[in-house]
Image 1 (cartoon, rainbow over the protein chains, first blue to last red):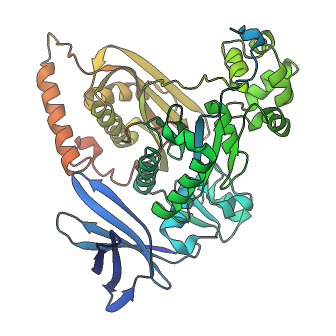
Image 2 (spheres, each protein chain N blue to C red; image 1 turned 90 degrees about the horizontal axis):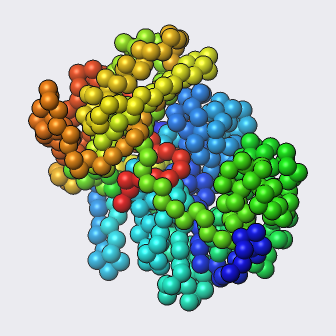
Image 3 (spheres, rainbow over the protein chains, first blue to last red; image 1 turned 45 degrees about the vertical axis):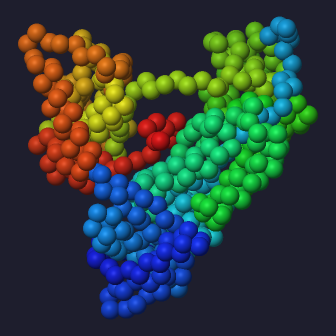
Length: 86
Length: 413
């Protein structure tokens, strides 16, 4: 089941200069702290000339699609899903 | 030099590599969302029952779910089928990551579609290392750097056709070569329809001249093949099957087009006008972005009863403004005598020419028109497509989504 959300969300992002890696570690959403277990994919898109980073991540039981606006540095939670048929 | 009639198999080493990302769209969705992995997943135009399946995961394919089925048909085969809508940006990002990785090995990387690449290793240092080693290294680097769930099938051969055929021998995750030592054995295991470019109609053509197997096809001489295809294609197949390169051709851009399957029934030209306007805007924007203008506009309309109306019109002079393209397309739409609900609407521009020279008009200020169109394109480019649109496109936000076409792709850098 997929749920489109498009809501502001708090994200803790970590940059590791040894590994040259940037990854979200946890999100604060709906009053809960959710730990990111795995980053499935990271890609970028442009809307006009604004660059957005999209992180497809999973916690222990849910999938989250997170969007970072590089103009404002604000995060948006775009989608939540589990692995079940819709 | 050997006469083409007596031409044998190309003895040159395999320098062409063909790389095919297995179950592309579905695998990328499984890569992005690990909960979808090892499950039957389909990417469809829409997740509604009549949506057309564009890609099926390896697990879904094993259950008989194929490209082209409706979502409801897929669910009959697998009630637990997970259906996702396409995310074109995600697929383009993976395509570009693949292209960048492959460019480390050879400068001759040709994208054949969103999920296929042809690589020519002739004269490269990578070739000296052996293409099986390079192929395995590419697979490993894809898993380490692009996605651990992504698998590719790699084929090697002396020409693109054999490399592509080799890439189809073992799916998923294959690495095979067709060369002068094994081509006959490989051909014996294939049917005519297994060959890329031989569809049902071509099979019938070959059957009519007594060719029923790939070995028959290989052994056929040029006059027999010419009688089957009634064209130069027979000669091309003669070369292709013997490992000689015939497909290393860039045909360039011949047209720009866009089509849309309507989610609800609309019948009259007035009802269809906003969607036609948005199709034209997309086509016009892409055409101008590639610096072309057009002297031909084509419209195709598929009705609910599967009747098809299509008409193209060659114009007296080149046009580049979407408003002019729209006028020509709307005129074509008005020519249709059917007024049934429309299922699919398609617009394309053909007879392209570079937009380097501007033909001035006695009655219209073409230079001013070009300045206006360029300014509008700049704004739409800066702020996102369709920030400024014609009034007739109002309320069309939910129509005409971003899609990736089958076949060769242009415009991705």
